[in-house]
Each structure stands twice: as structure tokens, then as C-alpha cells.
Image 1: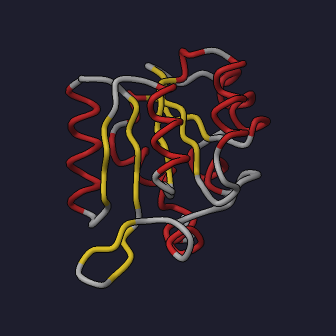
Image 2 (image 1 turned 90 degrees about the horizontal axis):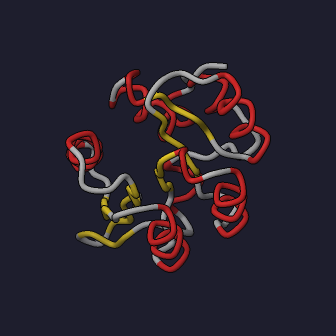
Length: 146
């Protein structure tokens, strides 16, 4: 499974589909909102910087539970969390999110089983080794047709 199949998975969303009901007002315009629950790492900082550069309102958190709460309360368009939180936590995250909110799980390396399970749960899996670009594609790829 690849990022493109992740984008075309069970929960097809992108910034257009979610902005009408989610996002943040900035200068009278709705901008997409992202919650990054990857802790305090260099990768998390690069992800946040990349999405801010794309015009997203980004909130960073220490982990998955806090990310889930903020995503639900703050009407996020997408939430990114570590894949190592376990199957039950992933299912709770996906089920708590509004249908139009994209859930993306990040793991250290490519993992076919985690990709399959994530897809089954309605989330995406992206390997950190694939880079920030792959993560951006998983979150906004539905909009670009990628």
C-alpha cells in the first residue's frame, strides 16, 4: 500500500471537503486546521513548519490522546499521530473524529501490516523515513488528485 492508496481510502477528505465545517478563521477566510501529535521531535517541527508554510493552522501536542481531544474540540481537518500507540488507541482516535477529519498514523519505517490495519480502521499510515512530503501528500493528496 502506498500514500496514494491511503489518500483514496475509506475516509476520503482533503482541505476542500473539510474546510466548510472545520478549520480556523484567518482574515475572514477559513483555513484548514491540523493537529500534530508527534511529540517534541525534529520531525514534528518539520511537519508543523511545512503545513504552516502551506497556510494551515497547526497545533502540536505531546501525543495521541491530547491530539485526539484537540482535533475533536478544535474541528481539525486532519490529525497526525504516532502509529505505535496500538490498535485500540488508533480505533478510538478514528471513531472519535468527525467523518471529514483525516487521521494519519506515522511510523518509523514502511510496515505493510500497519498500512493494512490503518486502512481498515479508516486512517492512513506513512513511514517517517518517507519524509515530510509523503505526509503532506497523505493529508492533502485528495485535493490534488494524487
